[in-house]
Amino acid sequence: MKIVATEFDGLFILDPKVIGDERGYFMESYSYKTFSENGITINFVQDNQSRSKKGVLRGLHFQNAPYAQTKLVRTLSGSILDMVVDLRREKPTFGKYFNVELSSQNKKQLLVPKGFAHGFLVLSDLAEVFYKTDEFYNQQAEGGINFNDPAIGLSDILAGNNLILSEKDKHLPLFSEANFHF
Image (tube, rainbow, N blue to C red; front, side, top):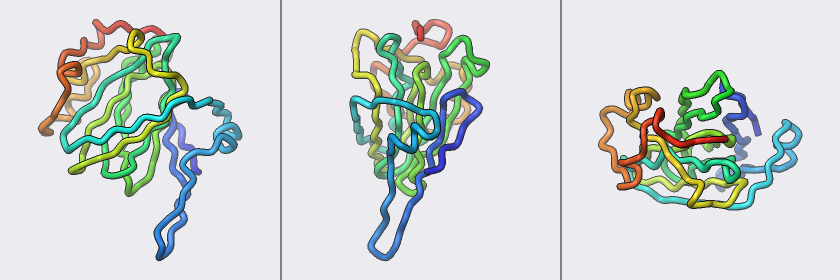
């Protein structure tokens, strides 16, 4: 597995080694040993999976400390534009976003550390997204940021898509009004 650093501290793209032949393929999607050899020690405690149709935008979501979550995100089928916004005030990337296409074709994964808002847009007809977390879900700690906030800049890359959002996500606060602490 190749672990690729981004300009954001702790945010990595994982590119697994895929071994394929006429039968199909095999890949290692997670290895504690590989992670720890690269200085990443995470104890994952919960797995989540969603299925969504084209145009669905989920996010941008986070959980505040002490329930903040590290996520390891991958797409089992279809493709998504995975997006994060850095909410860590002490980092030079505070308020900036990062996105990457995750698909069942490219098999890439995104390791999202605590302190980021996370979301994704479904690009294919259907997509199944799977992610591991190192903290359990806690409703009282949840928060979010409106993807359409011009201060973030995501609206430019999402323009032209027929977006489908939950009622909750339609009413998330702007970045400047969101309550986040890590």
